Length: 292
Image (tube, rainbow, N blue to C red; front, top):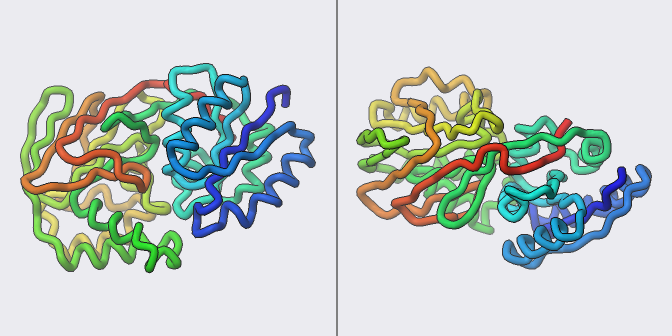
């Protein structure tokens, strides 16, 4: 490689997993003769600052943490000539999954060295950027539970646990959604605006979503689906075989605004990004990323 690598590492990602595997990742980079330096983040804002420095210095910004970190780094690199690499170190690692990188950060070094550059879309909302899925409603409650430090020891299964607990307390919300000017309203569980189509540690909510089509996929679940049916269909989401279920719909667009009849926090890639109502747009091909 003729470009140096700036490793932007969240040491607390994956309940400390990123910090534990960091020495092995560094050894793999040395074995390939890659010039690199390591910065450990202290906050999302710090990660953004490091990404800007990497871009300004002509370095590859290698995000090693969870999907929240990759989204933050992507937001700083979009619409520039800078390149991002992904070294999965979090709980979900959904962007790495979508790109075909896998969940092993040491093996991901091979992709960093021998992979190719792709231009992918970046979604924008609430003054921030994300690469996976923004959602609100039942998903907000699930994410609140998943972020509880008392249950994080469950790893990726924390999202399944969160869904079970949140569903037991749920009653439908009334939603108003505008997709490229077309309006619709319904009672239901959630609205999700997808870029990559995968979230929650391997839940393929929109299995056919593309990171390179300049469109966002809007998935929503209406009250036509009972709570029992929702629960029974949950395992199918991990295989992407739920899309024909009653009450599940997908639309596509470039700009989406949605709101509900009660307050919800919209989460994107595991982190809060905005309170409803929220408008989401897409920046087509705005990010250069290394993939297999």
